[in-house]
Amino acid sequence: MSETPRNLLDLDREALAGWFAGQGEKPYRARQVLKWVYHQDVDDFEGMTNLGKALRARLADAFEVRLPEIAMDRESADGSRKWLFRLADGNCIETVYIPDGDRGTLCVSSQVGCALNCTFCSTATQGFNRNLDTAEIVGQVLLARRLLAANSERERVLTNIVMMGMGEPLLNFDNVVRAMNLMRDDLAFGFARKRITLSTSGIVPEIDRLKSVCDVSLAVSLHAPDDALRDELVPVNRKYPIAELLDACRRYVAGEPRRKITFEYVMLDGVNDSDRHARALLRLMQSVPSKVNLIPFNPFPHTRYRRSPQERIDRFREILFRGGITTITRKTRGDDIDAACGQLAGDFQDRTRRRMVHLRKVAEGGKG
Image (cartoon, rainbow, N blue to C red):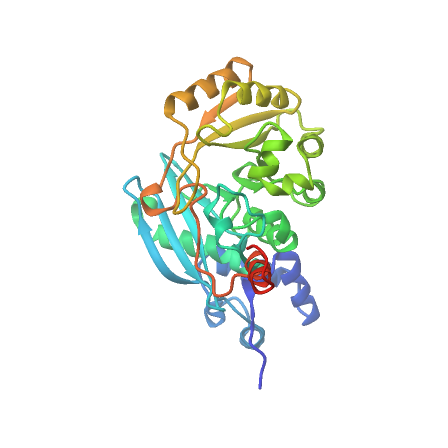
């Protein structure tokens, strides 16, 4: 029985050129194939007419271009769009498009679920199944772009990518970096570095590693100005506390005086939104080239949190702004279709790690 062809979307330019070299072909063949797939939307190797017939046959034996299946496609009243994409193993992930004037941002998932258990995030309640491979990350972008282009009013408005969907991208480092290489490659998607943002909960060693291999913008999910509170909201803080995280952020922007870290801060009523919290956050931000995105909490079923009142968010922003920190209150988009920040849940065939630990404890008579 012949092996299943590999998904071509798994290969960045270097890897594809290496395959061609192994076939005794010139590396420029990789350029030709990338242009067919990413510029011409040609998935059938027979349609790649500047390649010889024998080479097309070898490509067809070794590869296929396999995109996720569309399990759901919903549009918000504000124009945001959420897709549920089904993967080959039956798991589903969510990808969200957010239009804003001449800007269009795609929020891309990196894992099926998430293992970090941030208490205010819907994805965390679902548990963790596995990392996405490079093709599954790239496939979200390619398929979304094609779906958007099918509507002539939205053609070419995909301007920004944020690795801010389901999962912690730095815990899927190699696959995410390969995907971002394709996002930046002029032969593929051609996004400028400032148009791609990776959002992390703060995996310090991988922040340092990222700086050395892939030049993209960095956003950090902070959500608390002190370790005690952040330990509760973002449990990975127990391993990488705020001081270590901010040191890594300073290293990330070192040597680039115009670059800033974006710090994300979800506004939770009575939890992290007081004047005292704002002043503590201000002190932290003054030590790092930074800007702050305040995110009104987006509720999901069974959460214990509530969104901070607008007047409290405005007061919090004012304290930071008067302290010299660029601060934006993120507009809530797509909440009517559960596409807003923190609401992505997906559909997993098998929830592992935390769920398995829970079941084992229950079976042993302990607490879940």
